[in-house]
Structure formats: structure tokens, C-alpha cells
Image 1 (tube, helix red, strand yellow):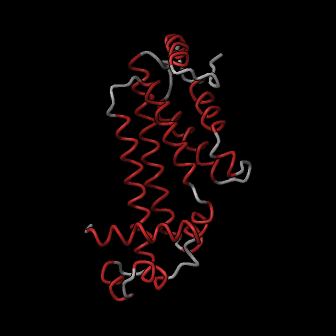
Image 2 (cartoon, rainbow, N blue to C red):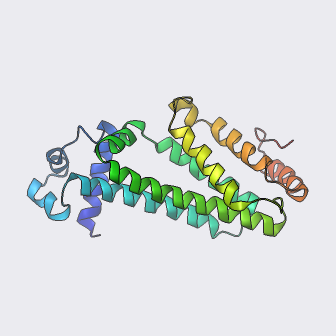
Length: 210
């Protein structure tokens, strides 16, 4: 991807985030960039192609953040907390209106991005569980595949129903409760002992393990 295409994607994404995908035309994007629509079509086949490249770039960026955590010298519990902080950041950027437009007007693209997003999330959770079991912080009898799928499902459900307001989604409470809810079910006794010290070290007063 050349510099011109990156600039188009960045500016178009800002327009879509602010006004929604449906209401923003290719003319609007060209006008925002100060280029002709002909020039725009030299880089992107049509609007769906532009939307697709924006979403793929977004997923690549998010996967890069997750991968960077997994390559740090952290144990499974520390790594999981870092991953939850990244998820919390993603929730702050989540735009329900944009998601709705993609689902309604580009259903095939929606399923493609959903598959990529789910695959990355599942692999991160699954790998973290395996790592925690190996380190002795998570229970040895855990079925990593099932637990990872349950966790992915529960997280996706938060975004696909109206139980939570947008304010609740981006609040610390979601990070806190989600982290505790997940980790309480997978910690071994060794893991509980470490987590107590870990939470005290980071002064995580709003996170507790029974």
C-alpha cells in the first residue's frame, strides 16, 4: 500500500466514523482529500473496496497491538491483563452505527471481518490459557479450546445486544468485571497467590480475587 492509499484510508475512516458509512459518498471522500473522484477510483475499485481496506487495516493494527503483548516477557496473568487493557481501548473506539452499516449494506464483508476478528481473539485467548497451564497459574484440567470459545462468545455478545450502554462499554467497570469473571474460573492455587501479589503491586484496588 503506497502513501497515497494510506492517506485516503485514514481520511475516509474519519468520515465514516463521524457520519456513518451509508451517508458518506465517494464524492465526499474525494472532496475531503482535495482530489478528483477519478483519482480515487485509480486506487480503489469502488466504495466497498475502500471500506474493506479500511477494516482490514484496522484489524491488522489491532492484531499488531495484541502480538506486541504476547512477545513481551510476561507470565500468563500479566499478559492477560495487558490484553484486557487493549480490548478496553478497542471498546472505546467501537462505533455501533458503523458496525450496523457494514452489517446491513455489506453483509459478505461483515462476515469476512467478523471471521478475522474472531480468529485473532480466539488464538490470543487460547494461547494464553495454554501458557498459563504450562506455568502452573491456570488449572491443569482446563479445556483451552472450549474456554477460549466461551470467552470469545461472551465478549462478542456484549457488542451485539443492548444490555450495555456505550458509556458502560468504555468504563473501567467492564474491564474490571470481565477480567475478574474470566480469571476466577481458570486460576490454580498458585495463580491465586500470584494474582494477589500482582494486584497489590499494581494497586488494582478495584480488582479482587475471592
